[in-house]
Image (cartoon, rainbow, N blue to C red; front, side, top):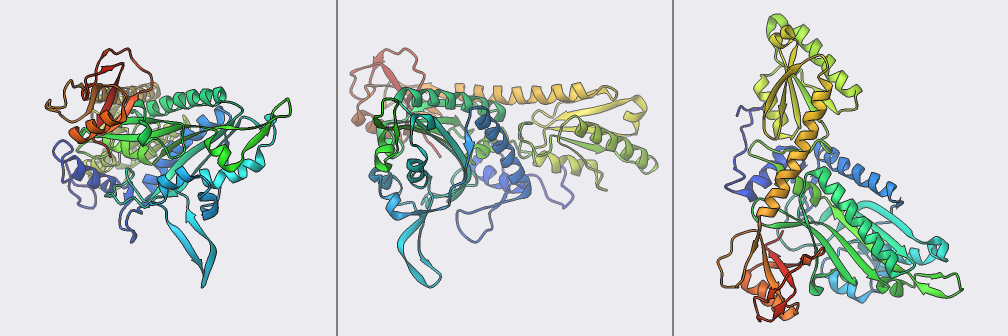
Length: 478
């Protein structure tokens, strides 16, 4: 591959040979982030990276609006006394919070913390907002930054100490209403993942790994090319646990005061990390058309004697694309075409249109897909439907490849002594915590849980050999 206009060479690491180093390199070379901020675990969102992330946010906001959620924005700082009202929550996050103890030259009477998540910030206010059954369901969300002092190795978008966070919080009159909300959240997750081209599985986490304070937790996990899984979304059923701690009650029709039932649904910039990891290649990032800041780049093939008419035609094409609602860019920089190809491929632009003197003479343009680099020569007149078709086909193919990789990465095991490859290991489980922990210890993997949509199963637990009616899924994780 050629160098770009700054003389940069292709990626120094191959995805198939050293996934970790490839990932660390590509997120910066593709101009998604800058890791040089002088606080560990806090990266800078570059313009290209931020536009990509906010494109994901726009899909989420549309889903939230259509499902009746209102967007709010709560303060970053949480008082310690509110944080300590839910003791299970404390156990889950107390070692990860950032504390604020001074303001100016004064010690604070009540310590403050930077939100690791927002239950303890929102729920004291929910107790003021919810008064009667007419206030329910209360469905709110926010997209904010959250902070957790994670001691593990940081990785852009995948494990950060300050991260871009979506969280939806709902209150319902009863358990059944909260369960219906969880079903809605699962449908939203499926539609979002489809737009991002990501296959995923939903697991009910084991009790020892559920969200602090939750009745149960569901997690959406995708499989990365190195055989590890990445959690890209979580949904929690709280029942009345937080409502009792924060006294969130409503007056029922008969006058009785009852605690609400609550759910949360959370996702983060890990969505972008998954897109990079799953779809990227040795040429850089491959962005799904739905979130690409630039969906189509038009590259004129220039020669001195035909420079002006070719640029004029390329500009006309870019403007036509923009008028149809596509995010298009004309690249008329005075550098070699190969350097332009490298530049835009590295940044993940889904489709490239090439046009030169011969194409103009023959009335054609050349379309090039980013994911397969497949080329197609199509008539210039009436090319817009073909552009749309190619973008739609690319999106479908990206999803199909991810789903196929996920399916092929699930392997059944019948003994803890078997040889185990990377991927998701599936084994009979009696449901006892002790057997689950032994699986984790012996396999060197995390027990992701059992499938939320259970398939019929009859077998024996790989640890104790008692009868098992479900299968545990285990994997190495990020």
